[in-house]
Structure formats: C-alpha cells, structure tokens
Image (cartoon, rainbow, N blue to C red; front, top):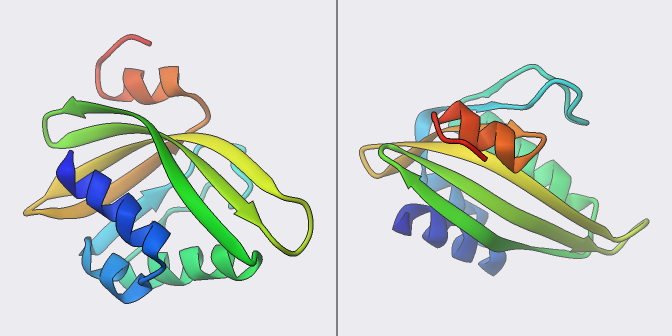
Length: 126
C-alpha cells in the first residue's frame, strides 16, 4: 500500500525519473475494452513512461488524488481521480486500477471501467 501511496506522491511532484524507478522493468499496463488509449497492452518501463509523459504533455498541470486503496495481497485495488488543466477542456476522471507488486516495484497495472470490475478482478465483491 505504501508503494502505491508513494507513487502518487512522486507523480504529483512531477519527477518522472523517480516515477520510472517505481516500476518493474517488465511492467505491463492493460486497459479495459473501450478505453480511450485502446485495448492493446503497453509493455516495458520505458514504453509506459512515454505513454504517461504524452498524456501529461497535453496539459499545463495535473494531479492524482487517491480516493480508496484496498490491500489484496500482492495486488492493490486503487480508486483515484486524475485532474488535469491546461490546453483544451479540464479533465476530472475517476479511474479504478489493480496494481500488482513484485519485489517492491509496480509490475502490472490493469485499468477497469469501474470499481466493481476492479474488485471482481481480485476476487472481492463491489
């Protein structure tokens, strides 16, 4: 849980080099079907960081707000709000993810369309 909390603090601090180091070199990010980024996984620490940097470049500033964390062993169900302002319309998106941790690093992130789907993915009911 502290790794996830720490990753949000590092993201909000804007240090993408430190953020990169929180990931396993072979991290996999999967999006739910119908997600704007597409349903193809993003694999590898460098590719994931490039994805996040592209998203951030579209805005003047952004921040993550943790809403809820649920410990599920080597996985954490995370509900968070991404707020971004700058070019174009402001963004205020609530997302739910399941983060898998391995050896103190984030090894996988699965994005879900809602919290109930994320809970179901780890065997819990929403």
